Amino acid sequence: MFLDRALAGVYRARVAWGNGVDILVDAWRSAPPDHRAAMIAGQGDLHRAGLRGGAGWKKLAEGDAAGALRVARAEKSANPALELLEAEALLALGAIVAGFDRLDALHRRGNAAASLVLARRRHMLGDHAGAEQVALALPIHAQAALTGARAALMNDRARAAIRYLEPFLDGSAPIPEPMVAGMVAVTAASALARIGRFDLLGRFARRLLEPVDLPPDMMPFVARAAWHGGLAAQAWERFRGHDGHTEPWMAAARLELALLAGDAERALRLMEQAGPMGAPSEAALALLSGAALDGPAGEEAGKLFREGVTVHVWRTHPHRWQPWIEAALRTPAEVGVFDLAAGELPDAQVVPQVVLDDSALIHLLPPVPVPGRAHGGAGVWIGEPLCRGAGVDLDWPERETAVIEAAGLPAAGRDDAAVWVLGTDEALPHVHEGRAIVAVARPGDPFWAGPIPERVWPALRVVRPDPRERWNGAGARVADAARTVLNGAGARCT
Image (tube, rainbow, N blue to C red):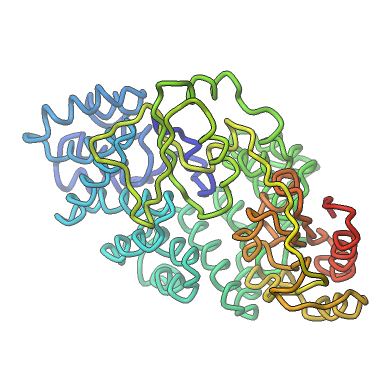
C-alpha cells in the first residue's frame, strides 16, 4: 500500500500528461496498447496509463496491484511492455526492494520509461545521488533532465542542475508541452538563486512575466520563478485576472505566491478560487496553516498501525520528520525505518502491509515533541549562513547580523553558548537534542513558515521574513528572541 501522500514535497502536475508525443511514437512503432501505457507510466501518470493500456494497467490504475502483478507475470514473456507494469505493481504492493530491482534491470537494458520511473522514485525517496546517476542515462529527455536537476539541487549542486537544463533553456532540445516548460523555468530559477546569479535571475523572471500569450498551465510555475527573482508584487499584479474575476489558473498562480509569502489565510481563499488547479498545493497549505497537526486521522492511523501490521517507513530527509517517525515506532505495529540513500534496506522477501514515506506520517500521527534540555554555557553564538540562495531580496542581509551583534547580547563560542542562532537547514540536525535555538526560516518553505516547528520542538524559536519588509528589522527580532530564551522565558513564535 504505497499512499499518494508518500509523494509529498514533490511538485506534481495539475493535469494529465501527454500532448501527443506518446501517440506519435506508438503509431510509428505499431506497438500494442501496453507499450503506450508503459510510456505514459514513465511520465508518472498511472491513471492515464490505465486508460490506454490493457487489463493489467487498468487493474493497477484501479488500485488492484495484486491483480496487475498476476497479469504482468503471466503475460510479460509475450509482451515485454508488461515488465514495467510488474515493477510498478511491486512498488504499489510495498515490495520496494523487489520493485527497484526490476527497475534497475530494465534501466540497464536501456528501457527509457523504466529509467524515468527509477530516477523519479529514487528522488522521491531521498536518494538524490542515485536519481542523478539514472537521469544522466537520458541526457536529452526533458523529464529525466528535470529529475536530475531537482536531485542536483537537493545535493547542493546548483551548477550541475543548470547543466541538466541548458539544452532545454537554449532551445537545442525540445520541451514537449507548456507545463514541462514551466517546471524547467522554476527549477532553473531556483538553481540561479542557489549560486547567487541574481542579475540573470532577475532578467529571466522579468521576461517570463512579459508574454501576453503565456500558456495558462505555465502560470503557477512562472509565479514561483518570479518570486525567486524578487518580483512577487509584479507577479501578483500579472495574475490579477480581468473585471475582478480571477480565472482558476491565475488563482493557482496567486496561490503559489501566497504560500511562498507564508500567508495561510490568503492561500486558503485562493485555494477555493483555483478549484482543481490548486490541488497540488493542499499539502503545503496544511503545513503552513498547521492543519496537518490539528486532526490526525485517528481511525485511519488505528488501522494502519495496529498490532500485527508490518509498516515500512522510508526516510526522505535525515531529520525533518523524526518526531513523527518516533510516534510511529511507539505504535503497536511492527515498524521498520529504511533509508534508500544510505543503503538501509529491508529484506527483499519481506512485503509489508503498509508502506509510507516519512512525510506522510504527519497526516496520520501526532508527533512526539522533543523536550528542551539544558546544555550549559552562557551567551549567544551566531552561525553562518543564516539564509543563502533563496532569491533576490530573500537572502539574509549582513546588516541584520550586525544588528544582532550590536544588541548587547553576551557573545559566546559555539561550544560554550547557551543559545545558537542558525538557519533552519543548519538547525534541523540539532533540534532533536532539545538545544535552545533561534532559527532564521528559509523563505518559501511552508514547514518553517507555519506553526508546526515550535509545537514539535518547544526549545526552538523561529524568526520569519515579513511578506512586505522581507528581512528588514529581522535582526532585532532575532536578538529579542535570543534574549527571551536567555532569560528563561521559553520559546514562542515570532
